[in-house]
Image 1: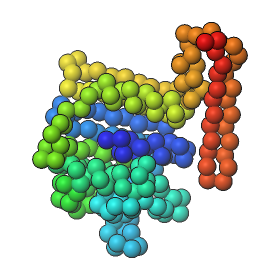
Image 2 (image 1 turned 180 degrees about the vertical axis):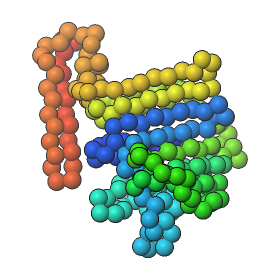
Image 3 (image 1 turned 90 degrees about the vertical axis):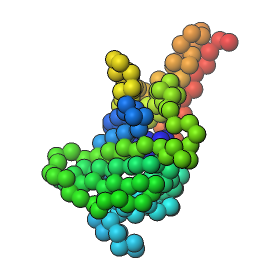
Length: 222
């Protein structure tokens, strides 16, 4: 599931998203929404299929889509979301982009529907919903504690990103929200909150070419 979340984090790091919502649904499927630009769905120049279908079904499909560029690496250079699709009994992709909401369904990585226009929309983003393939995985029950621990860490690492995680299997429904304006600076402060602090945290952020570097250091009396 992290590969799907990572696509939203990629958009947040590029300055195109500030919200991610992950839900564990009652049937143990996962839905992930991010309010980024949305996966393009125009025709891909090489595959002659929609860019959406190409991203969802082709390994190493990451790269630039459109003039503003759309990063779909998912942390694995384009492997991520297509691998999740291949390992899912069912996966539904909905995209909100260019004033349109579109939808496409898959099963075990194979398209089960054509790209269809659902209607008009005023928002941008991508909603992925998938159910792990039980014929592949011996364990398909997601640990909500593992999910919230990971998403809390991701919120620390991506400052000003609001991440909501919801477990609909619970009654009542369990919900957590993570938002840290200070990013890794907030993370360092949380790690040292119970120790005597020698100085205020040191923080620096710098962009060098295509790379962004953030450093946060705090000295404690230990």
